[in-house]
View 1: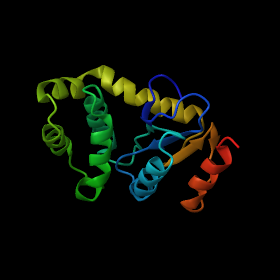
View 2: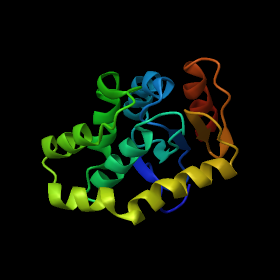
View 3: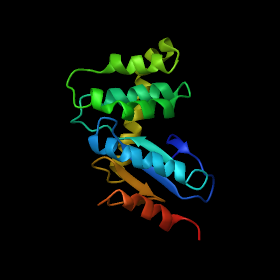
View 4: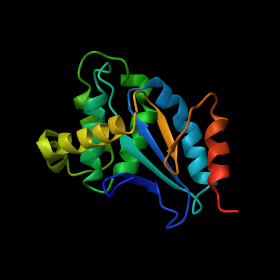
Length: 173
């Protein structure tokens, strides 16, 4: 985890850290999302949860979605837009046409400054930020989403309960 990683729950120094590399268009990420939200609630204050972008090339709107979330993050609305993407994934995922206008409507719905949002989405620095996460993931061997690390150890998920098992193993005794 580096300084640019988006932290959803910060439990402070010494707490276990869960980092998920995700693609907002990935159906498996969408399937894991409710579990991650439950774990965030259950371990609030005990475990740090963070996410990094890993838009897969085969998904037509994954980069657009990551840009939208990053643009929202620049206005302090990372978590709200992150949640909105997964809660609406079935409406826009797997479509070939650009869903950028839909994502802009999400920004409007969240009360964001739309001019600032538009500027951020088109700013090459926003794309560079998304690509930075992707590159960091690639350097860690991430090749699919979701890929989850607990205290720097990559999980090989065979079932969703593996995430909580790894969290419990990382908890201070």
